Image 1 (cartoon, rainbow, N blue to C red):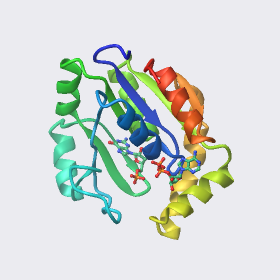
Image 2: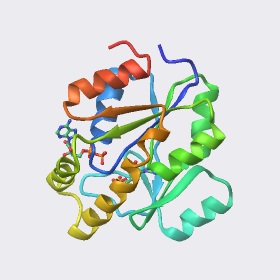
Image 3: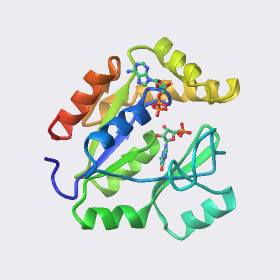
Length: 186
Ligand code: ADP
Ligand code: 5GP
C-alpha cells in the first residue's frame, strides 16, 4: 500500500510513455488520484477540457500564477503548464495517494515544497526510440517534435536527481516496476 497522503511525481521526456504508463496504473489502482494540469497548449485531437488538461490562454494562466493558484508551473516547448494547488492539497488532506505527471522544472519545484514526496524518472531505451515514439504518436508538428527532442536531452541528463529511474522498454515490465516502487500490489 502507498502511504496515505503520499505524493508521487512522474517525470520523463515527452514521448517516453508517461501517459500510457499512468493510464494503466490508474486502471489497476483506482484509489490513486491524478492531478489534471492547466496548460496554454492547444488541445490535441481527442483531448477533452477537464479530462486531459484545463486549457486556458496565457493571460488567464498568468493571472492564476500571480494569485498563487499553482503548486508549481513551468514553460515547456513554448507553452505554460501548471498544477492547480487546491485540489492537490485537498486530496492529500483526505489521505488519497496523489500522482503528478509533470516536466523537470516542475518536479524540481515540488521537491522544494514537498520534500517527503516520491519522484520517479521514466527514460527511453534510446533517443532514437524516443523520436520514433513521438513521431509514431502522430500528434505533434515537426517543429514541436524538434523542440521536444531538444528538451529531452536536458531532461535525460537530470535523471540522477530523482529517487528512482525506470526504463520504459517493455511496457508491462515498466508498469510492474512502477507499482513496486510505489509499493502497490500488482
Ligand atoms: P508521454 O506521455 O511520455 O509523452 P505517451 O504515453 O503519449 O508519452 O507515449 C508516446 C508513444 O509511445 C505512444 O504512441 C505510446 O503508445 C508509445 N509507447 C509508450 N510506451 C511504450 C513502450 N514501452 N514501447 C513502445 N511504445 C510505447
Ligand atoms: P504534453 O504537451 O506532451 O501534454 O506535455 C508536455 C510536458 O509537460 C510533459 O513533460 C508533461 O509531463 C509536462 N506537464 C504536464 N502538465 C504539467 C504541469 O502541470 N506542470 C509541469 N511543470 N509540467 C507539466
